[in-house]
Image 1 (cartoon, rainbow, N blue to C red):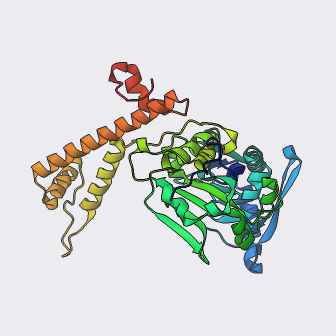
Image 2: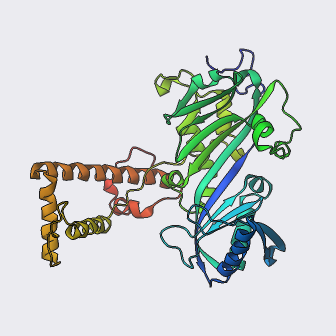
Image 3: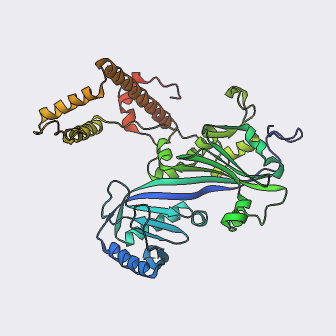
Length: 420
């Protein structure tokens, strides 16, 4: 069963379908921060000690003179996910390490809550975070997207919101989970992990779960009529997925929200006629065209280009080989024998590596084939990544110019089947 307008409905519109709003519903940030001193750490540790004794969070206040604003947080008596301090309010949640400089992972994580994003907007929320960290004595070295949820809410006739709607779904994700309650469709999740799509009855979710009744003010309506459904179309992207689309910093991310939405709704997920047939025989359903062309009011946005970066260097691989070789040289066998060599030199470590080749039991021919296969795979990966960045360059999207440098120096290498 396909979803198409009745014969008397104009082909350019779909009766009863109306976009209510669109925007960013959730945003998590990963920050590399350098602290001037450990003064804030001392305050947080004292407050955490009080919270531990009281078995409940304690309030801490931060004043931001530049904004003439005061923020009240509750500091938890425990840390979370390896972070020592956790403090939050209705607008923000901070997680912090007790490290003056970033190490192997960001030393500050910040979650901007949903209502804050809708009420204040992204720019103001980022300004508050930036100014608060400055007051605390921090210098932000890098601010990256850890997770971002983009959404669009639309009213559709109730009779369209049935399981049949997904007969027309064309998705790159393999995992699809439908949710039914009392024989009524409540929602569906497409994909899992680094990129997830969701369609669900937002009004029902507000009534039964989140109780975010302020969303009706955002929609500009008092209620959803019985013959209607307020459906949320939402895409959740984790950092890995955002990076694969070519956006590293938070500025690149929020400056290209339309391109991210276009990728999600045009390339990754769509609803079309004739599912299962060749793409030339399919046509995007009118209601989904509205989804594609209504995010932030931008018509026909350019889609982002997804590609994994190929950044495996000889130094990185050499370091791994040396690490494994030294580990092997230090081991005794399972019968308590001595290490392979008692004197550790370049020569003996080289012999350890040769010993490893013999232990593996693989012939020279097998090893040679493995090297050639990985050489070809590495070449294809780099060429694909260059091709993606060539497309990004021509669409005005953030581009990895380092990856393009070899072909820009020698234009005759260009053989990408794309716009020039």
